[in-house]
Length: 483
Image 1 (cartoon, rainbow, N blue to C red):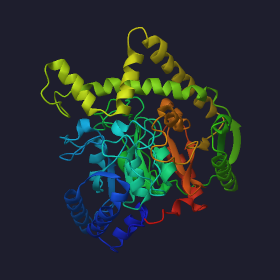
Image 2 (tube, rainbow, N blue to C red; image 1 turned 60 degrees about the horizontal axis):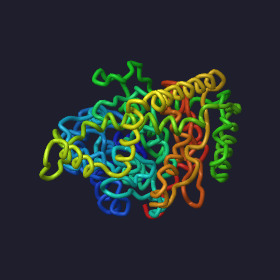
Image 3 (cartoon, one colour; image 1 turned 180 degrees about the vertical axis):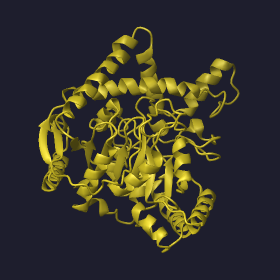
Image 4 (cartoon, helix red, strand yellow; image 1 turned 30 degrees about the vertical axis):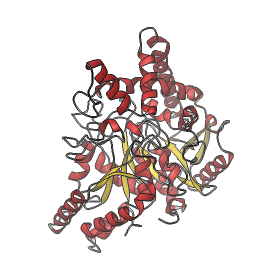
């Protein structure tokens, strides 16, 4: 049963081939057996999962149906979950049990999804490798010596290893799409505001967006359907009708205009990945798509702009973790200042401290105009480049990452080299656009992804293209040896 996709699980439950309780027990046993190799989970919620599975079976027995009713999933450990530890993979929140459910958690629970637990991640979602977690690095099931990507690496590793069919993630600068690419999954970052951020512990509020990780575009459509929608509790949520994301999966790609930015194939991209991306382009051309060269001239400024804006917002968001109200508190503080200093120094890891310092500096008097304001101006130029491009093409295609997964620890002494792995993904976050990564092949036995970007609220178009591509290729069906 562990090889079934979400869509196959929905059909199996509807046809009474197995129950949600049977499936849940099977996957929980598989997690207990295999996850020690991967470290993809922080918290397992066996009792809650079995309770939800029994409730889902009862609902089906009473005539209810639904693609997510009884389907097992897991949540990245920054979605608040009532009564369950929500740690953000940080010592700071190691003892924090959320007093409420995030909107994403509540919506998926209402749809009948069964939550098996909370997945490991980079601390406070800050990282590209899932190595900054207080609970240790997550390992890539395709090669246990390599990273799975971050910050949603726990969700990606668990789904790639067939521990469960799908999981939630968040994407601030590529943190769904990059681990999807490095573990042979499909990962979707929706339009900013499409999915509620309420109850999602913030890293950078103007960039963070929740989305699905699964093996197929069809499964991402199913999970996104349960996650999306306006939320009055979230001031950044957009009141936009939610379409049926599965309705147009089988639409023709004939005449679809695909833009390929020349900047995506410049120095820094592994030539073997470039070849696989060009092979993907040929596959889409066979399906009727029309390829058009385009330019995104301000992409070269994306990394410096992002690494001013994101740390600036992080320094503000993380100021609430002060050892007073909740989270880690130092022992025997001498006074309030000592309490603040030692609680934060002990509670935050090196990467989080680094970004807080950068952000606080960029926002400080005398530097705000020189750094933060300039970065926001570049952000607008990047958005304008995309708007101009989408006047000419329907979607934009390129690599998801410049390299395949690297060895654990290989970039620890040079954080900037890890930041550069986000070069193709962060532009979508800066502009607020939807983006999707799908499997495109392998380099040295490690997966590679191709990225698709679309205009605002065109997630359905991305899913349609990815689904048609997956009907005509088999990269997404391949699973790591031993799992």
